[in-house]
Every structure is written in C-alpha cells, then in structure tokens.
Amino acid sequence: MTELGWSVRSLIRQRLRAVLAVTGIAVSAAMLLDMVMLSGGIEKSFAEMLLSRGYQIRLTPKGTLPFDTEATLDRVNDIVAQLRRDPAIAAAGAVLGTSLYGRRGRGDSLVTLVGYGIQPEAQGIYQVQRGSDLTPQDTVGVLLSLPAASLLNARLGDTVRLVGRLDPQVAAAAVSRQLVVRGMVRWVYDYRGQPSIGTILPVMQGMATGSPDDRASLLLVKVQDDAAVPAVVARLRQEFPRLEVYSVADLVKFFKQRLVYFRQLSHILATMSLIVTVLLITTLLTITVNERLGEIATLRAIGIARSTVVRQVFIEGMVLTVVGAALGIVLGLGTARYLDSILTSFPGLPAAFSFFVPRRENLATAAVVLLVTGSLSGLYPAWLAARAPIAATLRSEAT
Amino acid sequence: MSRPDGPVLAGRDLRKDYPMQGEAVHALRGVSLEVRSGEYVAIAGPSGSGKSTLLQLIGGIDVPTAGVVEILGTRLDTLSDRELTRLRLTRLGFVFQRFHLLSVLTARENVELPMAEAGMAVRERRARALELLAYVGLEHRAVHRATQLSGGEMQRVAIARALANHPALLLADEPTGELDAATGDGILALFRRVNADGTTLVVVTHDERLAGQAGRVIHMLDGRICD
Image 1 (cartoon, rainbow over the protein chains, first blue to last red):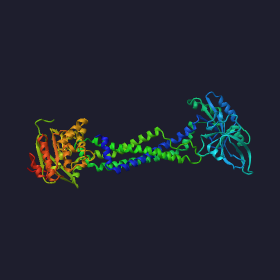
Image 2 (image 1 turned 180 degrees about the vertical axis):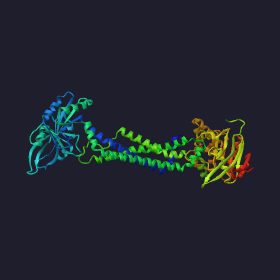
Image 3 (image 1 turned 180 degrees about the horizontal axis):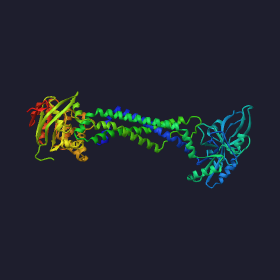
Image 4 (image 1 turned 45 degrees about the vertical axis):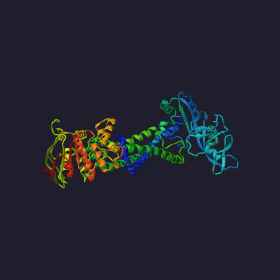
C-alpha cells in the first residue's frame, strides 16, 4: 500500500464529493489556462501574424500606424528603390489599401471590395493558394480572396470588372478596368469573409486616384538577418525622418498598450479562478480532516508520525489538484478553441489572429501555478491534522 | 536508560486534571504503579474512575499534570514529540474499544501500517502481516477491507496491528466493550495467548471476566488505586 494509493482510496471514500471537487477544480483550471493563454496569446498571435511572411519592418506616413488611417506615402518608387539598394535589406515593397467595387457580368450589380495594390516581387501580405501570382508587369491580372471570388462568382481565368472612384452624386465610375483572375490568394490581414482583390501597385493607384500617382499606404521591409533589425530600424529612421519606421517589436508594444485593460481583466479572472481553486480544495480537505480526526488521532496514537499524517493530507490535495488540472487543461483547450472561433468572427479582426494561443509554456505555467495552489490549499487542513489532540479526540470518539 | 531487570512500565504519583467550566476536574489523584516484563495486568473500575486516563498517560498519548511515567526506564517527559511518537511505534502496542482500523485499507494493510512507518521493507512487512493475521486466526480475511469485517474480526486485526513491531508492552482500552459475550470470549482467549507468548499486557476494563483472567488486577475508584 503506497501513500498515494492510500490517499486515492481515502478520497474515493466519498465519491460524489471527490467528483464534485475534481469538477470544480477542472473548471477553475480551465479558466486559469484560458486566461493565461489569453493574456499572452493575443500579442504572440499578433507578432506571428506580422512576421508570417518574414517582413520585420513597416514604414508608414508620419504619425500613423499601418492601415490605421487613410493617409498615404508619396514618392514610394524612390523610397522602395533606395531601400532595395541597402545591402542589409533582402526585400522591400509597397502596399496600397483602398476600397473599390466590382462586378463580373455587365448586368450584375456592383459589390464592395477591399483592394490592395502590391508589388509581386516583394509581397508580404498574401499567399497564393490556387492559380499563379502576378508578375510585376501584369497590368491586366488580378488576385482574389475566396470570399471575393464567391461574391463576384469568378473562377481562375474569368474576367471581372472593377470600378474605382465611384462618385455617389452622379453614380458614375471614374475608373473602370476589366481584369483577368490569375490566382486565388489568402490575404494575411483580412478578417473572415473579407472580399479582397489585389493588382499590381500602379493599377490599384489608378483605380484609387484616377492616375498612377506613386502613392502607397505602407512599405514592408525584410531584413537579411533578424538580429540586425534594430540597427536597420534606427538607420531607416535617420534616412526617412518624414516617415514612421516600426519593427514588429514596436508594433507589438503599441498593441500591448492598447490591450492593457484586456490583460488586466484576464489577470483578474485568472486570480479569481485560483482563489476559487484554493477555497475548493481547502474546504474539501478541511471537511475530510474534521471527519477523520478520530482516524488521525488513532494513527498518531499507534506511532504514526505527524509528518506522515501531514504528508497524507498534502497528497490528497495534490491528487485532487493533478486530476482536476489534467481535466481542466483538456477542458480549457476545448473552451479556448470555441471562444476563439467566436471572438475572431468579430468584424474587423484578421482571420489569422488568435486570442487563445496554446503553447507549451502556457500549459506549463498553468500546471505549475495549479500545483503550487494545490500545495498551498493543503496547508490549513494539514495543520489541522497535525495539531489534532490525540487523547481528547480518542476520548470524544469513545463516548 | 532501560535496565534489563527493571519494570517495563513505572508510573509515579500520576495526577491529571482537566479544566471544565473554569474548574479543575481531578481525573487522577496520585497513582503509582509498576508492571514487570511478562505480566498481564488489568486495571478495573467503574466509568469515570480514571482508568482510561491512566492508560493514556502510561501510553504517552497524554501528558500528566504531575508525576512521571517511565517505559523501559525512559522518562516520557524527557522525550520530544517525535521521540515519543517513535517510542509508541516501536515499544508500545495499542488496542482500542472501537478498533479504529482504517476503513479504506485491507486487514493486511492495516497490520502493515506501523511496520511501514517503522521503515520495514515491503516484502518483510507483508510476510509478517500475514503471519500475524494467521496468529489471530484471520489469514483468510487478509484482503478484506475493515468495513467488510465483523466487530470481533476488526478487534483481532487491531490486536495483530498492535503486535506488528514486537512491542514491549501492549495496552488495551476496553477491548471487549463493543463485542457480544461470545466474541469477547474469543478476544480474551487471544489476549491470554499473546501474554503466554511473552508480551506484557495492560488492559483497562470494567468487564469482570476480562479482569479476572489477568495475573494482577488494579482496582481504581475516583482517580485513585483502591487496593
């Protein structure tokens, strides 16, 4: 008979109580894990999303964050050329974001689309899923997201009509282009269901402004060596004082500042779940110890050491914690997945973004915190067991 | 230190007071006794005479208000809590009126418990537990939980548990108090055998039949030895 086996049998003596306690701990553990994943997961997910195509630096108009306003950069061809001459830079490209309209057939009604002007030789915001990428000189090709393809009812090789600068006063299209669908792509920053299309930068500039005016919303830069990013950022800030230069770390920092209340909330909820766990285990073990004072007094009387009795109570607490935590981790991962699917379906959030990011370190953190909590929860009941008066308890048991 | 020719147990002028509603209740009023190796002593008396309190003091599970208890020449008041616990484990055996077996353990595991605490190897203690269960006539109940045993069987297991670490002195508090007469007779016979096999025995009882089979009877009344 091991001490662990003895503890397990003691616990299952009151089966329903043990099951309820384990369930309670599992729910608390699940909540704790979700909050741990949430508090660190958003920024991790954000950083991963920004780095998904390997571009570590963004240049935007002064005073703005990427795609935060409709402000644009001018003379982007010169800037891109200058960036590409830098030996530390592996790739650089411009992106213009705008809204436009599209239809497939002449009689079809116009649908609203998000348009990206891209430089295919340095593309940092999409991945081709089907068909082919654009070439830098492809002035009649277009890339569609699957929602855009669905909305336009378009397939690879089809021709679609895109309309820019639509004047609502006269309902006349200032710019209209017929383009051939070259590929279906996943735009990295699109929210779920976003109908986005992409053309080479000059085509989109023309659609947005009526003429190729050498403007873009932001520039993306891929540095050869990750370790060189801070130095390159510092250098670019000196070279382009009229632009904002952000590394991914800078953007994550801004993002964290915006989410500070969210993080505080998750910390509060995690703390509450821990308090609930402590109370639950402490209450259960205290009841158990009080019910077993006669047994404990007998053990002490026949020479079982105080430390053995205390260890026994601790092991019972740990058994409850470990079983509850194991179930809680499974439950937490399940609920995180479900909650993530709800939260990421909110309008305006990139589909690649996750609120709950399961990571080994999250699981390890939650497990360690729970084990420490389980140990602390056993302190009072163990103290109670250790100080049980042997003679008085045996006397009261005999009457 | 233990003297080979000295008493197994010596109590000198033992007094025990309990506070009750601001006043002291005198449970023991100066009791002295000696028990030599191999003796079978019964402490008899009516309820409230102080016999169970005396047993708790000589068993080191309660502390006298005054007086000294020596087990094998060791004064209990000089021992730390840890040393006293160790002495109870290795030198004394206890049998209680209500058996006090651990209900979640089997008969064999209950008997093994003091041996495990004493650090005996698993195989050795398992063999001794089975040997002791055979000694008390319960080898066939070794794998049954305490809750599956009758009162008499539980008391036999408790006796086997008390004998586990070869105690110098076995203390029993009303060991037949919860048993019917026929079952109690079986326990009496077992005690005689335990004593005949060399274990010193002190039994607290108000059962005259149990007291009558002891080699010496100490009668108590109102916290004092009265004969």
